[in-house]
Length: 235
Ligand SMILES: C[S@@+](CC[C@H](N)C(=O)[O-])C[C@H]1O[C@@H](n2cnc3c(N)ncnc32)[C@H](O)[C@@H]1O
Image (cartoon, rainbow, N blue to C red; front, top):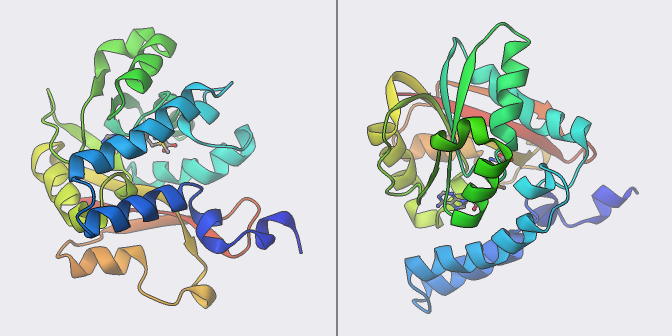
């Protein structure tokens, strides 16, 4: 058995599993408010990312460049044309740079923008990417009102409590995605079909009343129990 498979699958899927699960339980029990939920995540994530010694670790990714590409580049499958791209939860801004580079290899011209809950991480992204500093914003995706709309908007659902996830998608589609644009969810890790006991994330999103118009997936870099996935909803 290799190291990856010795790790419980919850942690293989998301290294912040305990942090999110505890905050979720405290929120559901009324021990914390929603504002405290966000503050609690930020208090752990921001110092950990700022301590990173490369732009991947400063975006929460522990692997090397090859691993990063395998885990994230399928997001570009959602780009059916050139356009603007907003990375919700941009951290160091490395995904902004990466998707522009990966898409360009297929002849697609992507103009990246960023948003992060953490002022310190948004500042880090602005320092790293001074030519895009004016495109990097601070705010909470659940209610942020943008200065413009974007053709492609990427988000993670884990950025908000479970009970607000449908609201997050609705808000981004109604206020942030440009007419004719796409809302991309992911990347996220999901169990391979043989191991999945409940609905897929795409199936859950459909039960919330959205139409999932496409998806992409890749084998996991080192854990055969998991797939990297992303999916998109046309605005
Ligand atoms: C794992 S990093 C993602 C980095 C990069 N976008 C990627 O996909 O690899 C998650 C980032 O989302 C930010 N974040 C978490 N909750 C958020 C929210 N509600 N609104 C905006 N950003 C949020 C965190 O501060 C963190 O920088």
